Amino acid sequence: MAPSVIRVRNRSLTACLLAPGELPCSCSCEHLADRPVLCVASTEQATPRTRTWRRWTAPRPGCACSGPTCWTTAAWRRPSPAATASSTSRPQSPAPTQSVELLAPAVTGTMNVLKASSEAKVKRVVVVSSVAAVMVNPGWPQDEVMDEACWSDVEFCRTNQNWYCLSKTLAETEAFDYAKRTGLDVVSVCPSLVIGPLRQSTVNASSSIIVDCLKGDHEVKLKLRNFVDVRDVANALLLVYETPEASGRYICDANARQVSDVIALLKNWYPAYNHATKLVQVSDEPLFSSKKLEALGWKFRTFEETLRDSVESFTAAGVLD
Image (cartoon, rainbow, N blue to C red; front, side):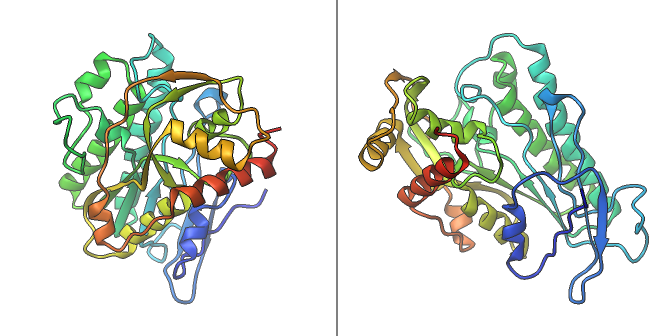
């Protein structure tokens, strides 16, 4: 399989960020007439349960084109492995391997990208974090919308074995600590639950929440959830990369909906499906503010458009058969 090369031209990076599939474990560089050299590589761990990969725009050690002519303008840290559907909402049962599977790729992977970016003199690193690094904070006023000032409580996450939220929080704090120490320009984007058209051949944890609403054999938790379209997340990443004044964290959340209302919409639009009947009421998620990101010019799709496009892509992929 030939290595992938991303061309960073105007807004074509959005398509690159949404490109399906995984990059091979190889490196490729290309000189562009109007942009710097771009180097793309990925890594994948050997064990099936800990598969993680990263898309780099900084040359790796040993890259054939490493040297004074190989430099970049941005690096992108892709998300760490996804949590299970329940991992961000309640304490986990003891699972030593889960803590390793989530913490190591998130923290070590982030640091690897940051160090390589510094060596390559990258101008800005955009870290894809999550509202998981925002939402688990028992000290935050319950009636107050969460913004970028709110961080998940590390010790609370550790005590409750909430490894996913802990991994996201540690990775993001490590990134900003590294930025302070080195002067590297680091910006983070914290999306809520990402749905929308599938960009891979399998259903991930976030998309499975919608899939489960259309299949009666899965338990569905009724609560307020926060959603954002994958295409709007890609635009947010590009926006904070291209905007010189962008700095710090950016919550990327578009629509808050009760899951019961989502099910009602799906029943109305797609009556032929075997809709969820195993329903369990649980605590609502907090509300988030994306005003800081919107101030940069970020716009997002309606929830109805995102939901329709999600289901259409599930149908095309055969995951609802």
